[in-house]
Length: 201
Image (tube, rainbow, N blue to C red):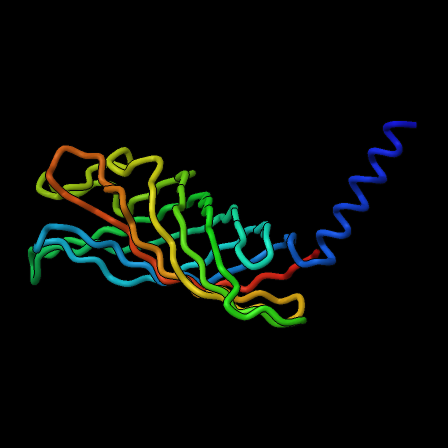
């Protein structure tokens, strides 16, 4: 009987929280535009487009906490030199990104919210691929092992909610050096992201 009463209490409190708009969750998809910056004048990176898919939880009313889990694929082309001596290598990284954001609702009305948010993001790299894999000995990235398996970054941005739809626009600034090899190369991934989610609750 006590367990039944406890279950009813939890369901009642949870329903009240959802009704008050202090809890929501749902899936999301996004578009990424990323570029890798480095400290070598001889190595340049082009901007590439990619995607992400995941889910989010939002806790709070005026001030809220929003953790997420997003699967994403990022591709970048690294170029070195020019003319006949030019070298080029594609780097493709599949990863699970986990942001933990703190946000504030600047406008909060029935059916409409306007928000800002910022916070750290941890990236766990699931797979790394180089094309081509074999480069000259002067090329800094000699194998996929030269790319770290985890990275930290910071995200910041703004968003709006219209009824059950939620739209976020963010910029992500890389903190960690992606490179794990023997040269003095410093690589950081910076990304612009637009995502659209659906609040199921």
